[in-house]
Length: 218
Image (cartoon, rainbow, N blue to C red; front, top):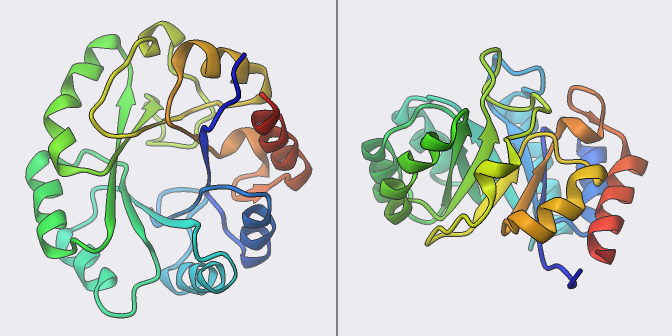
């Protein structure tokens, strides 16, 4: 298998200490959940503290704030001035008009859009969004949660995908699945959360390091 340059994002971080430990492992992005219904939610104040620490120690790492069906005015208010995130990831049912408004109001922050894939037909809904976002994230569909379920998208849906923007794969990513992902699916990045956790929001650092090492060796 050829060497991979696949990017890695670790999502659902809840503590400053773990954020810095994981950043040291050489990840490309770290995500914090700003969705109150999530077991990995942390407050805006704690998020800013973690992101500021990352900015000082690892300025090249993308700092991703994950939101879901959040009022646009609130996102704009939180993202102007002394902002702490470099990327806003929309993980809800946001439409194209929503994405356009975010891009217009806060063009200095990157915009990623997540899509939950239940059937292969769901992939057809993505194309119109490509002109208005910087990256696409594919996650598995789950009726209980919008993300972090640990469930995989069917591999058959993911082969030979082509987008005009970089795309990330999320949902149940583990060492056991890596070979198939890198050989057959070939996303630009992997978004990893529950598969490396001790409990929601608390990462197993040894497991995280092993997965990243395995990826780099692949």
